[in-house]
Image (cartoon, rainbow, N blue to C red; front, side, top):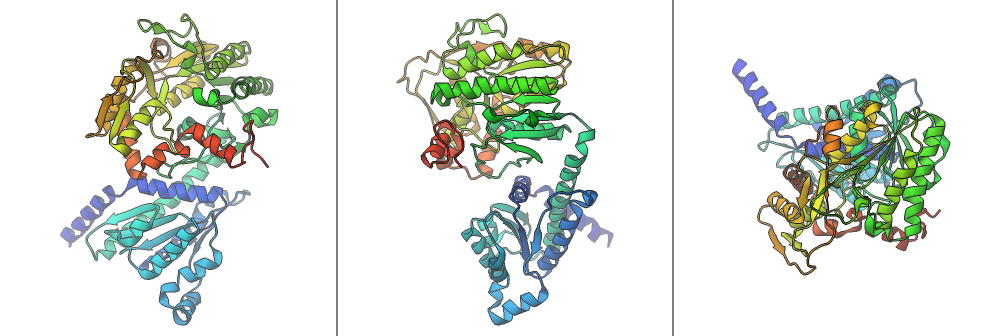
Length: 546
């Protein structure tokens, strides 16, 4: 008997170790998004899986908010389908057993909902019929399967496969229960945090929190115990729900130009990311760039100071250095600023004016990140290293039209976020009224270096330098000595090109990333803004139309 028990535990442990973590994370992200949309979660399965669905729905609806029953908090709405046993027999007897889930589901399902389909084999016709119905409505499907996953695993958006030999129902159903209870515990702890964190750490307002950097920064702040208030106009969309995106309870959906003093009340620190995000967009309408990147930033800071915010962390840019002498690494304070584009000019002008607000009660800290790379729920492919790796992954080719000699400083998205957090946590005598270039040791790379790193990330991809554009004049090296010495106890970068390249490739594989994604509007900011204007959703000044 002991031998059997040990063998069962060993096998269970091996299967648990092999679970698709990113797919479970994707399922959690789907449930979170459903909650944010005030949608419903429909859960169903046959036999033991139906019993599990019944138990999980009761447990999930009760447990997630069990510590806050006295508070007026919007709840999850998880519903087992069919809702009663008599409904099962009615559909099975009067219509057909293949309709016991799809029939009642059609009475309720709407856009914004989600379904969890539980099936050990993944091939039950009545399960697949309900899944196909959900697909017709554009409703995301979480497939919880066993064995080889069957058809359900192919159809599901989140593919939670407990891979075992065929017929191992006891093992599969046991681990299905573990996974479902794990998701319950995740949301219980998440909502416990949101309701208790006021007593743990300070409140941080993140403008642009639903953008490329903002989504990662929000996750890192929450993981460190901060209470986050988000502020975003929501131009951009999640590419695919592979990486979990934390949804902040305290979210303001508004254009930064319309910021009001009430938006900043109760906030201890502001991390200001909101801006038109790069040179091509900045040149779209230079007056608009000035309104958003300069005037709105200054307005936000002045209101923050007035309401008693202590620290204002500004996301600036190295583009203010412009074209430079490549023999010298550019320093924050002593190097000449040669801003050329509208984007660069507004960033430099904003820094200068923001620092005039600095005093003993209000500290301004400016960070100038290198070009950022890395995976994010709001992925960008219009920035250099992400572009190179995505091109290699989706086409098998990397084509560089310059000679590859220009220099570019780059830094991983999580290291940039660590710098912003250092702006909150480092002593004021180190950071107040200071600017910091953000990068890593030896963080300057030639375009050739970046292309070769992308090729290493995607073995077998073809790399060519056409040289048709000649030698690119946009070349510069930046010094990171200041941040790496002054903030050495608070800023500790962990990512290099190879580690970041592997992360991107893993992200692309798990999201089934294609060339259409790579070249499409969801990963290219200028294309997305043009799309919103063409669809008459934004006006010419980038305000949402009513």
